[in-house]
Image (cartoon, rainbow, N blue to C red; front, side, top):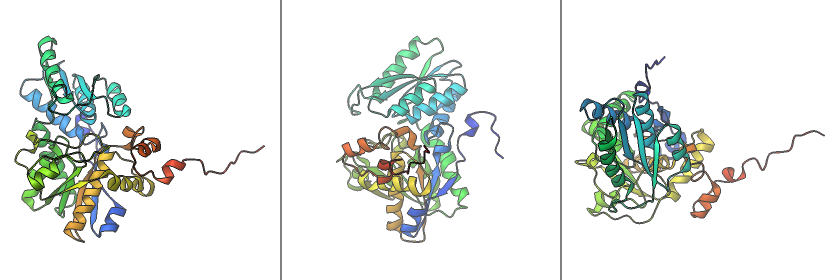
Length: 343
């Protein structure tokens, strides 16, 4: 039995779960890395831990200091929880368009939450750039100082997956892995795992949602981002420091209408209720399986739980408003149950 002396040591070593339907439909073995089983319930716990440890080692984060970050939610949750366990406070800047559930969790984690209007990265008030300026101001005014976590361009993020996620996948499957794929937000997960597994002959695939520009960049050399996606925390329009030097072996642009039904079926048939980025990841794993051919073993990332998107992704009214498919079982709920009350 695993015994952990603190929160940090409980991060990682997540299980692989076989995705039955995805495997049966493609003739491959498709596995999901259950990152929703981390203490903060997402893959971002790994980056948060390495970013904090790196800042401490460099002497930038001192006892009682403040961690500032711009995030779609999950990295902020990880930073806030890990930071609290080590005696730090967190200030999180988040686009106001992100799910209410993630905002609520950030507050529960003790973070000071700053909501800003959604804006592209080129806008100086983009949440990432805003958080950088806020960190500078707090560094000058806070008695114990402040750091900017800067997950997008802080390669401690990538290092977390080079040292932990990639080797875990390799060891769990005893080296019998042919492909790994996931979407990109900061780039840390995909690039870090690629650094660990590409030299071992593992093919690496990028699963890009519509509205993101990396598929176009890696296939045509230009940043183009047609369409849009309801997924949160993924989709990138530039080469972050974490992506520097990384090249995928294959890439796909995946629409929500293709990915979401896979997620809904997974909840109904396999008991896994996950977030939208996992939908893109599973669709990418199935595309990789079909491209590589039957008999391969492919791994993707199950990033976070569906209860962080209950008012959006798992809300029939929201889905209909976006013109997206609504699973019948989700809409029906308890309406078809018989009445069993007695007079």
